[in-house]
Each structure stands twice: as structure tokens, then as C-alpha cells.
Amino acid sequence: MDGIDVRPADAADHAALLAIHHAYGWDTPALEDEEWAIRVSGSIVGGASLVTIEPGLVYLLALIIAEPFRGSGLGRQTLEVLLGSREARWWTECRDSRVAFYERNEFSRSDRLPESLSIYLAEPGVLPTGRRHNFLTRTSELGE
Ligand SMILES: CC(C)(COP(=O)(O)OP(=O)(O)OC[C@H]1O[C@@H](n2cnc3c(N)ncnc32)[C@H](O)[C@@H]1OP(=O)(O)O)[C@@H](O)C(=O)NCCC(=O)NCCS
Image 1 (cartoon, rainbow, N blue to C red):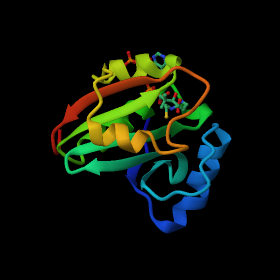
Image 2 (spheres, protein in one colour; image 1 turned 135 degrees about the horizontal axis):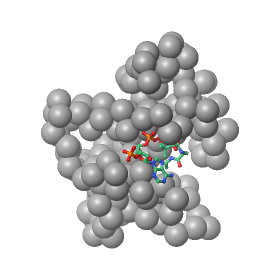
Image 3 (cartoon, protein in one colour; image 1 turned 45 degrees about the vertical axis):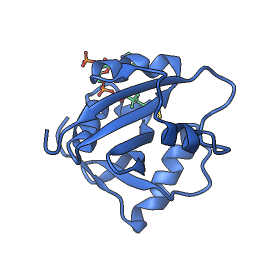
Image 4 (cartoon, rainbow, N blue to C red; image 1 turned 90 degrees about the vertical axis):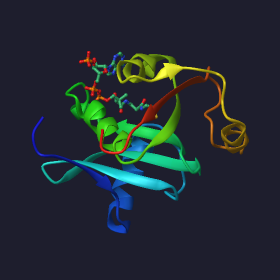
């Protein structure tokens, strides 16, 4: 897909990002983490939320592409930009149907979460309830 732009969101992007998160079921009241905006031809069509748990340890809290834009490589391209933005160990959690997407992007399933991440995830409202949790992890290099 042409005209893709993935970069850290600024304050003016937050309303559009929040609307996308809400439309696709993530009931967050506000955006307080490291937010990235995904644009196609200038319009926001998705977003990503990252939390730095400790230096070199990043949790991908959310990655959402609006439905009409899925399946065109935008998710993969977004992950490439995010992963290339730092050298880190990444973790994420997703529903069963998204595991394959992350595995195709070199994440591996693991339940051996670092203690600092477990403490963060135990905070109320961080992990979704009512479904199985699938944890995945991979490392990244700056500029990869
Ligand atoms: C999951 C999501 C981010 C993927 O983005 P996308 O732009 O549709 O994915 P891409 O087109 O970049 O797909 C990359 C690869 O993953 C595969 N893939 C994507 N979604 C998949 C799925 N649900 N099941 C299996 N494979 C999937 C694609 O086939 C592609 O494989 P390929 O490399 O062999 O071609 C997007 O579908 C989405 O926003 N879903 C809803 C929100 C969500 O659940 N987010 C994740 C948890 S926060």
C-alpha cells in the first residue's frame, strides 16, 4: 500500500486515535501511553500504544488497523517501524485469532513474563477479561 506514514502521535491526533480504539473494542478512557498514529494518504487509519516497562522492555498494549485497511500489509509495516525504533525486548498479548499475525512477524509465544511486566499487567484494566490470554515476545534492533 502506498502513502503509508507511521509516526509518534501528537496531541492533535488523540481524538481520532481514541475513536479508532473505541470503535474496535478497546474501552480505554484516555490515551496516556506512547501513542503512534498510522496514516494512509494523510488520514489516520490505525494506532499503536506502547508502554516502556523498564529500559529495553516494551509492552505493545494495542495495535489496531481500521477494518477496511486490514490485510494489505499495514499491520506488518507498522510493526516494522515500531520495532525499528529501538533495541528492546517486546511483549504483547492478544486474542486467539491474532496469534498468527504476530507469529508471522517473528513473535513467539511465551508465558515466562518478566516480573516487572507481570506487575504492570496485574493493574486493574490492563489485561482484557473474559478470554484466554496469549503472550508473545520478540527482540528488536534499532533501525532493523
Ligand atoms: C491484527 C491486525 C493489526 C493485523 O493488521 P493487518 O494490516 O490486517 O495485517 P497485515 O496485512 O500486515 O498481515 C501481515 C501478515 O499477517 C497475516 N495475518 C494478519 N491478520 C491475521 C489473522 N487474523 N490471522 C492469521 N494471519 C493474519 C497476514 O496474512 C500476513 O501474512 P503474510 O506475511 O503471509 O502475508 C489487524 O487485523 C487489526 O487491527 N485487528 C483488530 C485489532 C486487533 O485485534 N489488534 C491486535 C491486538 S491489540
